[in-house]
Length: 36
Image 1 (cartoon, rainbow, N blue to C red):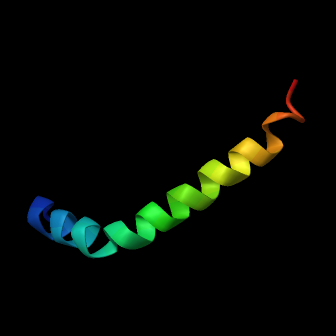
Image 2: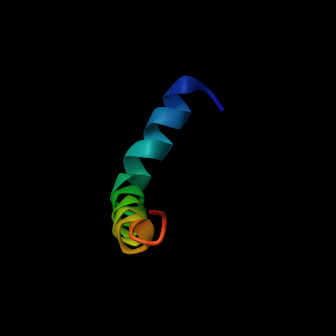
């Protein structure tokens, strides 16, 4: 995959990536109190 193809792929999937990152971030907050 060329750099341009990768950039286009990331652009198309940015909304999905943001959603997944948001879910992971909220999940990390949920479990953080178990790690103390």
